Length: 137
Image (spheres, rainbow, N blue to C red):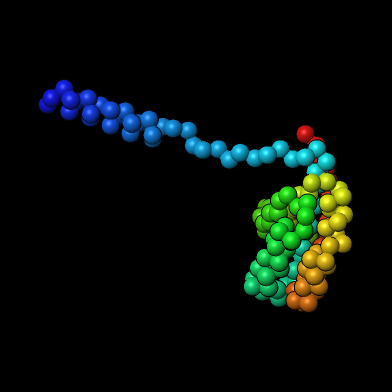
Protein backbone atom coordinates (compact mmCIF):
# COMPACT_ATOMS: atom_id res chain seq x y z
CA UNK A 1 0.00 0.00 0.00
CA UNK A 2 1.34 3.42 -0.87
CA UNK A 3 1.73 6.25 1.58
CA UNK A 4 -0.99 8.18 -0.26
CA UNK A 5 -3.50 5.29 -0.01
CA UNK A 6 -2.73 4.90 3.70
CA UNK A 7 -3.25 8.62 4.25
CA UNK A 8 -6.59 8.60 2.40
CA UNK A 9 -7.84 5.58 4.34
CA UNK A 10 -6.79 7.25 7.58
CA UNK A 11 -8.60 10.49 6.73
CA UNK A 12 -11.76 8.67 5.67
CA UNK A 13 -11.70 6.64 8.88
CA UNK A 14 -11.19 9.77 10.98
CA UNK A 15 -14.07 11.53 9.19
CA UNK A 16 -16.38 8.56 9.75
CA UNK A 17 -15.61 8.49 13.48
CA UNK A 18 -15.92 12.26 13.80
CA UNK A 19 -19.32 12.27 12.09
CA UNK A 20 -20.66 9.35 14.10
CA UNK A 21 -19.68 10.83 17.47
CA UNK A 22 -20.83 14.40 16.87
CA UNK A 23 -23.32 15.63 19.46
CA UNK A 24 -26.98 15.64 18.43
CA UNK A 25 -28.45 18.92 17.29
CA UNK A 26 -30.36 20.78 19.97
CA UNK A 27 -33.62 22.59 19.55
CA UNK A 28 -33.18 26.24 20.42
CA UNK A 29 -36.19 27.80 22.08
CA UNK A 30 -36.70 31.46 22.76
CA UNK A 31 -37.39 32.48 26.32
CA UNK A 32 -40.96 33.50 27.02
CA UNK A 33 -41.79 37.15 27.50
CA UNK A 34 -41.86 38.04 31.20
CA UNK A 35 -45.61 38.70 31.08
CA UNK A 36 -46.51 35.56 29.08
CA UNK A 37 -49.75 33.83 30.02
CA UNK A 38 -50.47 30.13 29.61
CA UNK A 39 -54.09 29.20 28.92
CA UNK A 40 -54.81 25.55 29.72
CA UNK A 41 -58.12 24.11 28.53
CA UNK A 42 -59.16 20.54 29.31
CA UNK A 43 -62.16 18.94 27.61
CA UNK A 44 -64.38 16.06 28.55
CA UNK A 45 -66.18 14.59 25.57
CA UNK A 46 -69.39 12.58 25.58
CA UNK A 47 -68.87 8.80 25.58
CA UNK A 48 -70.13 8.49 22.00
CA UNK A 49 -67.75 11.17 20.63
CA UNK A 50 -66.09 9.82 17.52
CA UNK A 51 -62.34 10.17 17.00
CA UNK A 52 -63.11 12.10 13.79
CA UNK A 53 -65.21 14.71 15.63
CA UNK A 54 -62.52 15.09 18.29
CA UNK A 55 -59.89 15.47 15.55
CA UNK A 56 -62.06 18.13 13.87
CA UNK A 57 -62.27 20.06 17.16
CA UNK A 58 -58.54 19.78 17.76
CA UNK A 59 -57.71 21.01 14.24
CA UNK A 60 -60.08 23.96 14.60
CA UNK A 61 -58.58 24.80 17.99
CA UNK A 62 -55.04 24.61 16.59
CA UNK A 63 -55.98 26.91 13.70
CA UNK A 64 -56.70 29.73 16.17
CA UNK A 65 -52.95 30.22 16.64
CA UNK A 66 -52.67 31.55 13.09
CA UNK A 67 -55.91 33.53 13.23
CA UNK A 68 -55.51 35.49 16.46
CA UNK A 69 -52.62 37.86 17.23
CA UNK A 70 -50.63 37.34 20.41
CA UNK A 71 -50.74 33.54 20.46
CA UNK A 72 -47.14 32.33 20.75
CA UNK A 73 -47.72 28.58 20.94
CA UNK A 74 -50.42 25.93 20.80
CA UNK A 75 -49.99 22.35 21.90
CA UNK A 76 -52.32 19.53 22.77
CA UNK A 77 -52.35 15.98 24.01
CA UNK A 78 -54.47 13.24 25.52
CA UNK A 79 -54.32 12.37 29.21
CA UNK A 80 -52.13 9.37 29.92
CA UNK A 81 -51.80 9.66 33.69
CA UNK A 82 -51.89 6.32 35.54
CA UNK A 83 -53.37 8.06 38.59
CA UNK A 84 -56.94 8.02 37.17
CA UNK A 85 -57.75 11.41 38.74
CA UNK A 86 -58.83 13.15 35.52
CA UNK A 87 -62.58 12.83 36.24
CA UNK A 88 -63.27 11.99 32.60
CA UNK A 89 -61.38 15.01 31.23
CA UNK A 90 -59.12 13.64 28.54
CA UNK A 91 -58.00 16.23 25.99
CA UNK A 92 -55.61 19.00 27.04
CA UNK A 93 -54.99 22.14 24.99
CA UNK A 94 -52.46 24.79 25.94
CA UNK A 95 -51.98 28.18 24.36
CA UNK A 96 -49.27 30.61 25.37
CA UNK A 97 -49.97 34.31 24.91
CA UNK A 98 -47.55 37.21 24.87
CA UNK A 99 -49.38 38.73 27.84
CA UNK A 100 -52.74 39.01 29.59
CA UNK A 101 -53.96 41.62 27.10
CA UNK A 102 -53.39 39.17 24.22
CA UNK A 103 -55.27 36.48 26.16
CA UNK A 104 -58.15 38.87 26.82
CA UNK A 105 -58.32 39.83 23.12
CA UNK A 106 -58.34 36.12 22.19
CA UNK A 107 -61.35 35.46 24.43
CA UNK A 108 -63.57 37.90 22.53
CA UNK A 109 -62.03 37.42 19.08
CA UNK A 110 -64.52 36.37 16.36
CA UNK A 111 -62.40 33.30 15.45
CA UNK A 112 -62.55 32.11 19.07
CA UNK A 113 -66.31 32.71 19.16
CA UNK A 114 -66.68 30.70 15.91
CA UNK A 115 -64.67 27.88 17.47
CA UNK A 116 -67.05 27.88 20.45
CA UNK A 117 -70.00 27.62 18.07
CA UNK A 118 -68.38 24.70 16.25
CA UNK A 119 -67.69 22.97 19.54
CA UNK A 120 -71.35 23.24 20.53
CA UNK A 121 -72.70 22.26 17.13
CA UNK A 122 -70.83 18.95 16.85
CA UNK A 123 -72.75 17.46 19.78
CA UNK A 124 -69.78 15.67 21.39
CA UNK A 125 -68.59 18.25 23.93
CA UNK A 126 -69.53 17.51 27.55
CA UNK A 127 -67.54 19.91 29.78
CA UNK A 128 -64.35 21.92 30.11
CA UNK A 129 -62.23 23.57 32.71
CA UNK A 130 -59.76 26.36 32.14
CA UNK A 131 -56.73 27.52 34.09
CA UNK A 132 -54.60 30.53 33.17
CA UNK A 133 -51.27 31.38 34.77
CA UNK A 134 -48.08 33.33 34.27
CA UNK A 135 -45.06 30.98 34.39
CA UNK A 136 -42.60 31.73 37.15
CA UNK A 137 -38.99 30.57 37.07
